[in-house]
Image 1 (tube, rainbow, N blue to C red):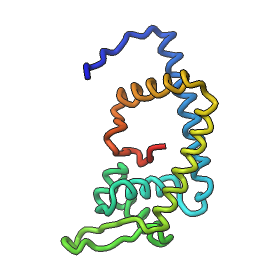
Image 2 (cartoon, rainbow, N blue to C red; image 1 turned 90 degrees about the vertical axis):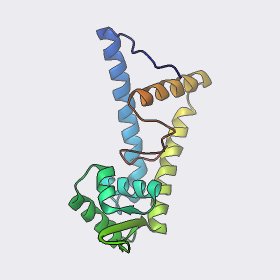
Image 3 (cartoon, rainbow, N blue to C red; image 1 turned 45 degrees about the horizontal axis):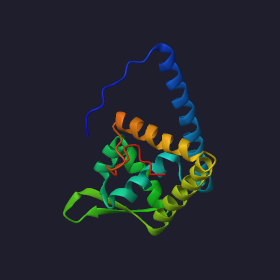
Length: 166
């Protein structure tokens, strides 16, 4: 695919684009917050991010988790301890290297990720169903270009912030 050349924007265009993206991001954050509502008494947003990363990566070393979440190892360990106490993750000593800690989701942890993701998908589906087919196609194109410009590839399968595809 040929590399896109950035288009020059005047100040008015730039401000309009930024305002539209900020409004869209507020909507998406609100959807994310509402989707966590059903499990808010069980997990915090940072803990949910950890569950999502485990869901996507499977069994993960604690130090790797800290790197993926961009937190220090002690923060990741406290989060993992709380999630283990809640029965959402299992933490074990790595049998191949006893200095390492491995963690993985429990069935209940997986169920929470699936439940929250389903709620988010349903709410987004309800919103886009109120758009015309032309608007939906334009949204797909615009979001694909926005994601690509930001370095977030839909094909990569990774979620640097710990968010599942919605």
